[in-house]
Image (cartoon, rainbow over all chains, first blue to last red; front, side):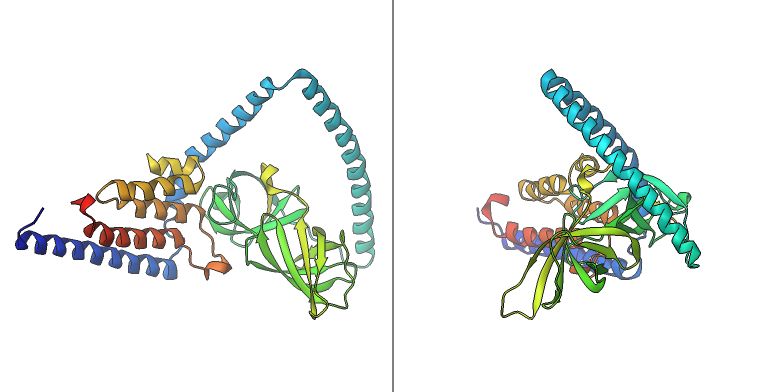
Length: 267
Length: 78
C-alpha cells in the first residue's frame, strides 16, 4: 500500500518522538542507578511480599502432596535411610558442640573470648533460580534490626553471603558465590590468604602459587569469619608451565535445599 | 498479569513472555515496567555487572527502541 507523503512524515515524527522518550527514560534510569538505586525497592518488595509468601505456601503444599504418589516401599526405604543419617548427624553434632565448648574455654583462658552477636531467623522467599542475580529475598528487614552488611548464615555456622538491600520487612542477600564476586579467604591448614572468585551455585575458584600443597578436602575459611568452615576444596589443577595452580572449592551446603537462614545483626 | 507472574515464577518467564508480546503487538512498552520491577525486586550491586543495578530495565528499553525501528521497516506491522 502506498501512503501519501504527509502520513509518512507524521508516522516518522511519531516514531522519533517515541524513541526520544525512550532515550530520555534510559537517561533517567542511569541517573537513578547512580544516585538512588534502592529508592524504589521498598515499594516493589511491599507489593510482592504477599505473592512471594503465597507462592512458598503453594509449593510447600504441592511438594508434600507429591509424596502420596510414591510407593509405600520406597517411602519406608527413604525413612530408614533418613533415620540412620539423623543418628549419624546427632553424633557429629554432639562432638562438634563439645569441641566448640573446649575452643571457647581455651580462648577465654587466652583472653580471646568470642563475641556473640544477636541473630535472627529469616525465611527465604526467593532463591537464585528465580532471580537473574545470585540473590536471596528474605522475610526480615529494617523492622527486625537488619542492616546492610549483616552476615547471612546457614544453621548459624556457615556464612553464605551478606545483606545488600534492606526494606522495612524484607531484605536482599548477595551470595558470596555470585559469579565474579571476590571474597577474601584463608585456604588449607597453612591458612594461606587468597581471593576467592565466585563461579555461581556455591562454587569458587582461587589462584595460588604452585609450591603450595593443597589437596581435595582441605578447608577454606572466610577471612571475615574465620571461626567456621566456608568451603571444601574439590579440585586442584594447573599446567606444568603455569606459575599458579587453579583451586576449585565448593560451599558445604547447597542453598537450593535450604528454607531458613540466620542473619547476624550488626552491632 | 505478567507483573504478578514476576513474583510467582522465575524472572525469565515473565520477561520472555514480554519479549514475545513486544513482537506480537504493535507497541509493548510494558516490557520496560517488567524489567524495572525485576530489577527493584532482585537487585544487588554485582561486580561482574560493574555495580549497575538496572541491567534488565536498560536491556528492555534498548529492546523496545530496536523493535520500534525494526517494525517501521516491516510490512507486517503496517
